[in-house]
Image (cartoon, rainbow, N blue to C red):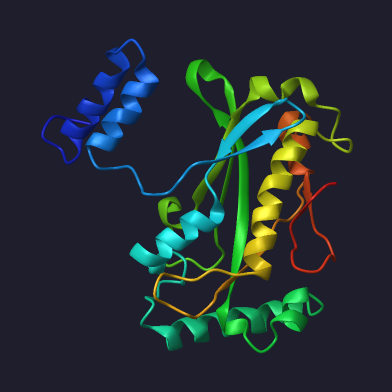
Length: 245
């Protein structure tokens, strides 16, 4: 990025945080001072496999916030006022999906209100962090998006450095105890949003998220492949996504 380009001064200011002794705290403080911090709380849970807390951003908290400030990201490009367009989009999706999986729980549980059921997806990938160390990241988003940009299609849930889970890999079928437990946290959130739903402040229409996570065998065998098998398709009521356990 060249001087004078949009966002250049902001990036320079964020970069100075790493000159501080405690650069992580300095970076977060700079983000808050610049007004880029969202009013969404960070949750935590105890991972018994590690014997320590792990932080994540609740799907419900993010969804409620996004629905309030930028509903188009969740409602297939529609605003809260464009109910008919949104309902038509959802009914069209479920009509098509019925041909693929007519026995899905959503048709028996919410058959008369499919127009308010949002199909969702899970994304998990092992990327590269500082000093080329691996980092596992989990995100989620709507299957029907109004934009091809990943910033509009995926929302952060959590991440974990590979040092925390690499020694727990037991092969593709046996899985990874730490990643399995991480999946269980996400699955519990997704199940609750399916059964209980969520609303925007001041809006009484309750929406329900229907998550799908399709099992895929990665080409390589390692921690990432263990994560790939940690979520599977299930006939269990409420979700297509459940933890391996």
